[in-house]
Length: 168
Ligand code: IDP
Ligand code: MG
Image (cartoon, rainbow, N blue to C red; front, top):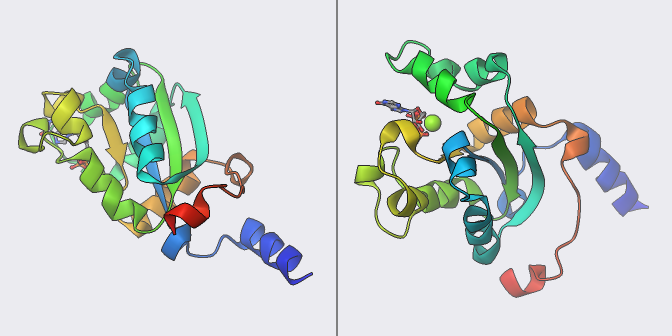
């Protein structure tokens, strides 16, 4: 009974996800999709031990992209960034796990691929800052905002991973 109540509560009231329930928003950008990097990127997050809770391929409307990158609206590259992000389908994902926001940013590497260490996604698979293959939320607060911007509640899946007790 208590579990039923908790799962209904979690579904409708979406508490601040913390600890092993922390979530982040990851997107494979149009260049990453075109360059067939989706599988490799998903593989890295799966193998690390994170849990996939949302996944879709989408041609993203410009309105959503402008909202997503609202903080960068005054940057000189803003309009080319919106053009780049709408130049083809994007794979939008939500990953869950302990410290997933910070860890995912480390797995991505620096914004500029030239500053990204080998072994990171940007360090391994791209060259230019304007075609840097992947997005990842930069804080728990932005993750929560971005997830609710990109995903409906019904697109986020509640499932128990059978390897959970081998990871935590
Ligand atoms: P982040 O993606 O590492 O969080 P942000 O500074 O939030 O980096 O910038 C968002 C995106 O805008 C970058 O991933 C990149 O695609 C693009 N961008 C950032 N700086 C530049 C630039 O100097 N020239 C062109 N594009 C840029
Ligand atoms: Mg950012």
